[in-house]
Image (cartoon, rainbow, N blue to C red; front, side, top):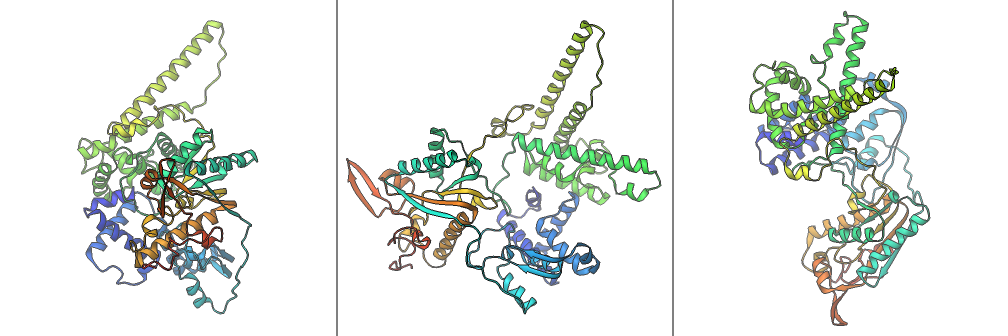
Amino acid sequence: MFYEDLRTCGLKRRRLRELWAFLQCGLANLSDDDPAWIQTTEEQAVLDLARDILIFENAVLPGEAVNLAVRALEAEPTLRQRFGSPVVLADDYPLMSRASQRLVNLLATSKIAVAGSEKTALPTFEPYPCATGFEEFEAVRAPLQRVTLEAPFHPLDRAWEATPDLAGEMGLIARTIAEELACGTSPEAIAVVGVNRTWRANLQRALASVGIPAAPLGRQLQKAPKGELSAAGEDERERVLKQLRDGSVQLAGSRESCAHAGTNDTATQKDLPAFPCAGDSIAWRQWLSFDDALGRSAAISELRRVAQPQGLNLAEALAALDADSLPGLPATSPFALSLLAPYRAAQRLLREQSEEDQPETDIAPDSAAESSSASADTASGTSLSSSRHSEACEESAVARPSSTRKGAEPCGRSASPATPAVAVGAPEDLFGRTFDVIIFGGFVNGFIPSRDMCDPGVIVGGARARQEASDRVAIALAGQRATRRLLFTSFESCDLETAERLRLHIPRIRLRSGVRTCDIEPSSYLQELNLGPKQTSGPTDQRHPSA
């Protein structure tokens, strides 16, 4: 949503992504130490706009937070005494940004130990890791003690199995999962990954046909999105609405405590918003992003232009706009109407939920007639509340595209609890998660490495090296995310039509029972894993001209 607001600067998408990546990388690498860090007016304009957006929405970006923390600890020694620790252990040190590495160094007052792998560069939680962290740490802290661990932290059962055909591989995976479930393994502790999207879709259907629940494994975005924001479901709307309700309750509690403390505490009351129902600015920004992300960004940009000079944040500006007390932006303007429709819908939902949460007083009826009357009144009140809830949901979805409303559940219907399911996704989707059992399926030439990598001369030079590094990271990620068992599966043949559709590497075609059948080789990376036979057509083949 922040990136959508940033796009209102008018720059082309690609240029804005490049500029913002440069600014994010600069904050993560502490490049703002250099006064000449910003060299062009375009870079300065984007940086100023980003700061205005964050201030208006009471927000801070992760990279910016670490940067500010480092600056504060360097400027105020008392903060190190307050937040520091005698002993600090920093795990995955090379996967941190330079700012995070500096931060943990500053927090250690007596002793610090850093740990991590120097060999494989895996995906990180921070978008700009500092791979030279060990060298920089050693240069600053020398002399130091270095300990190298040879044995893995936990034993991992690694194996590879091959089947005659593609259907056999699907059956092998299904049987393996069924055996694990029979042994007491939870479905949520099992993941199946594959690099080919069509293969994963076929696997989900195969698992569903034998009664094994499977669900796609969502990916965690770390950088600015390349496309538009995805449509939000009812669960996401309920989560944001709860965040708005909690923010309003906390704000009301703060005002009530100030009132009980006395009216002389003007400093505390000055920090509170002028509008008691203003709420959380970030939650309001999330709510406004539903249905029309880019259009709402333009409206919020106009609202920020008017409200920020008056010292208002987003939540306060929306409350002032609703009361038609915001000079410079009348409530009848198109921008204001675009924001007020979802804002008033949310306020209506919050009022209804607040009324439903009010404790009811138990009154004993004098007769059966009074009891029936009370029950009827309660039922009518519930029906009225549900109808208002539906009307408010319809009002908030005025600008929602039909494609967004199509898959959503009716408003007011509680979502059924999710059934435990086996996760199916790409290897990179394992980032940030851990599973007892991981099955790496479709481990054949054409999938990993890709078909173009298997054909000599198609991908050469630096592009080939980068692709090989990406494949090895995917394999290493599967190995590090599995805690007990890692199984690689492959198939030895399939028909020519399927092989072409899946873009498999085809070393040989044979005619079997009148069907053109392709021989499929297991992945060449099996040799590096010491699990399979040596291959002659993959990226490890030194006879290729591109090798």
